[in-house]
Image 1 (cartoon, rainbow, N blue to C red):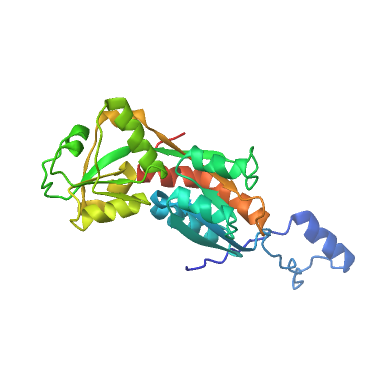
Image 2: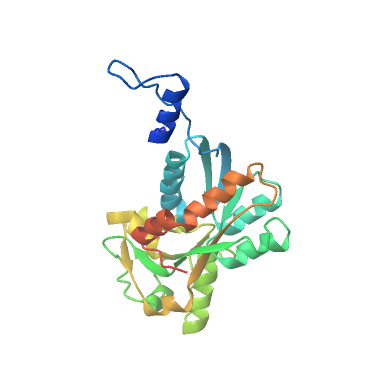
Amino acid sequence: MTRTPKTVAVLAGATVLAAALALTGCSGSAGDTPTSAAPTTSTDALEGSITVYAAASLTTTFTELADEFEKAHPGTTVELTFAGSSDLVTQITEGAPADVFASADEKNMAKLTDAGLVEPSAPVDFATNVLTIAVPPSNPAGVTDFADLAKPGVKTVTCAAQVPCGAATVAVEQATGVTISPVSEESSVTDVLGKVTSGEADAGLVYVTDVAAAGDGVEGIEFPEADQAVNTYPIAPVVDTANPEVARAFVAFVTGEVGRGVFRDAGFGTP
């Protein structure tokens, strides 16, 4: 990633200059040259690298935020790992060297707090998301609503139930009484989207932000029942992070003004 150095301009105060002249016996007559202020360095003490484990649906936004964070703190490096939230929890529980975890739901974050790997008071909610139907631009199966996904002959792909997008799918099924028999259950929402864009599926249940990020690759079909399963995204430093200061700063960056703007532009809701 490109680094942008940060510099700090320092102006010497008039009283400081006067004191310097007095000490050197300068009279202030023409030809006297004032001494310049001593150079100073940036007050940003953040340095070092962190590894952020984030839900697959955050790939675009967190890539942008990591770049912006590094620009704001030139001494830092942010490494990103994306996958389904449940897979990331398993990896962290088994000792993967994560410094920060961002989940696509509160349930998976709770698994880490229950295991003592994240302080219970540490997670901060920073965004929300809802499901939508993704179909190829030609919409070969003629899908128009959620119930169409259960029709015979419609090749529908969903996330596995343990993944946040899969849990949301189950919640919508229970609320509507519609039961989908998917041809494939994937471990992340990006895998579902890949099945649709490749033409292997007639439809897939993904987040509204995934459809927005896919551009012309898919068509999104919203359905009102999606409101029955709103996913809230929390983020927190991992307890045994090797760089707690940078980890906390990144969490603050994601949940702060810059992060809110990035998520809003990507189509996420507010928690």
